[in-house]
Length: 169
Ligand SMILES: CCC1=C(C)/C(=C/C2=NC(=C\c3[nH]c(/C=C4\NC(=O)[C@H](C)[C@H]4CC)c(C)c3CCC(=O)O)/C(CCC(=O)O)=C2C)NC1=O
Image 1 (cartoon, rainbow, N blue to C red):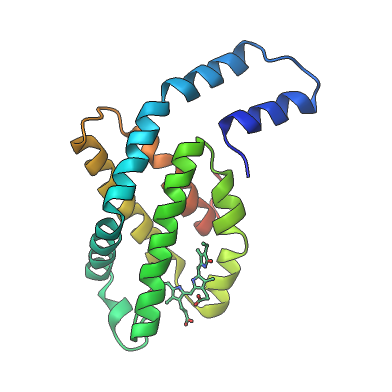
Image 2 (cartoon, rainbow, N blue to C red; image 1 turned 135 degrees about the vertical axis):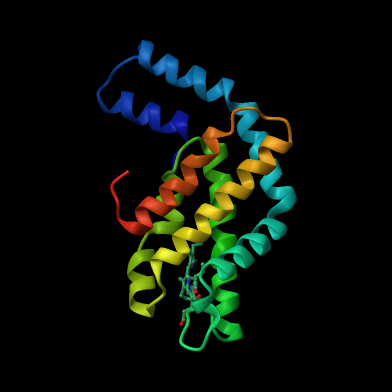
């Protein structure tokens, strides 16, 4: 599992190079964005239950078939599994924001997930809709907390979405 710094070191050590200007630019942007990334993770932590609940409700409003007989959130067991999955995505997105790197998502969340969903028949499309709804909720909360530029919040949510949909990032 890597963060921005360890992945940079790995990359430079792999070719036996000292850090160059590009490396220092990357490091500078990682450290100067640190306060904002911590603030965003803090907003997620403080509102996690609320974000998951609101996003799930919005997802079920958008794709109501999920809750109907035959739908993949029909029955309490499936409904709970879905909401739990949303919580996983949110929690791991907060880790990735702190790391400034999506490696934790590849390693801990996405490994084999598509195959698991496909074999259980859990639809990917609505899952991605749910992830994107969480992204929008988090972004608006982060904006309300006083951060002007919230674009950095997109990365982990978009990575999860793209990898689940198997679109190259
Ligand atoms: C931390 C990393 C991690 C992830 C990501 C994870 C996901 C995950 N979700 C699962 C199930 C599931 N996931 C869903 C999800 C949904 N249903 C819907 O209608 C929506 C589209 C969607 C919610 C957004 C459902 C319904 C199941 C149960 C499927 C079944 O057993 O029939 C399963 C199968 C085992 C189980 O039921 O627990 C896994 C492994 N597990 C992990 O350890």
